[in-house]
Image (tube, rainbow, N blue to C red; front, top):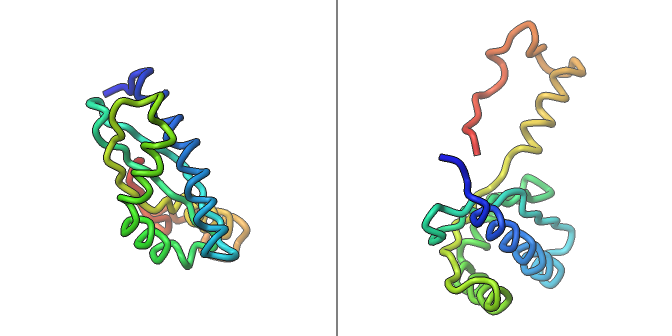
Amino acid sequence: MEETNRQRKIAGVLQKDLVDVLQKAAQDGMKGVIISVSKVHVTSDLGVAKVYLSVFPSNRRDEIIKGVVSNTTIIRHEMASRTKHQLRRMPELLFYGDDTLDYIEKIDKSLKGKDENPIKNPSVLPRRKKL
């Protein structure tokens, strides 16, 4: 199903504000960690927002995602206060880790010859789910 213009606008607003909230939290408590919001997908009823986070360094991704998920109510409250003039109801936030950078790095390493060549053997590359 195609995303409506309203869903895209709300996703854009949420993405912009989430970046501010999460970067501020990263500066306060997690030195040397970069968190970016790679994609926000809002459901058609505007009740749920799936947020995909990209974390650098990637070896701390699971730890950071667990921390963000455990603080979802605080983040949602902060987001509601930021978007109170734009949204009537704050959607429920679901956070997921985005492994796109790892996938690109693996392809790049394979193409440079450090791993088995994926052009000659495509089964080397893992199958990915579509976001």
